Amino acid sequence: MATVFICINVFKPELHSKTLMPALQSPWFAPHVIVYMFAYALLGASALMAAYLLFFKRKTTATELDICDNLVGVGLSLMTVGMLFGALWAKEAWGHYWSWDPKETWAAVTWFAYLAYIHMRRISTIPKRWLLVWLIVSFLLLQMCWWGINYLPAAQGASIHTYNMN
Image 1 (cartoon, one colour):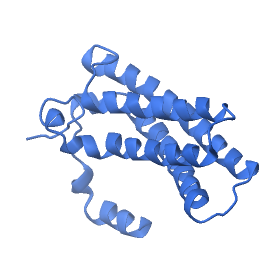
Image 2 (cartoon, one colour):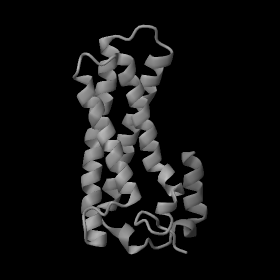
Image 3 (cartoon, helix red, strand yellow):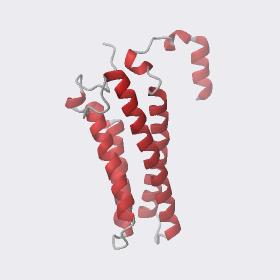
């Protein structure tokens, strides 16, 4: 895949020579996206681990749940930093830190879902299977934030996170 993209850049550089719209030219844009991608990768790994433990493993050990906890802890930390970078980017691009845009609202819902997992994990009376299901549900919320809101009528045209040049 890397060779394909290198060839595209070498033989067709005009494909990527378009000027970005002003909101995407902020120095906060790239760190916001990069940090979020790392967060999504770690939270995706936690969902895969949860699915493995839930559907394929007979008995779950504390060490395996600790792996989920570590993935969620670092992923949520990165998500928090990504949100902060996004707020700084929004302040520079649109003049305010938060606008309750559909993308931002779903990001907050996702953030609270993973925060709830961390808090529920500390309560020993909650069954481990419920916690694993919660991790999968949290990842589905993350997918809604990342992909799904693009299909919501509320996000069509009115969202500040829509970058059509039409």
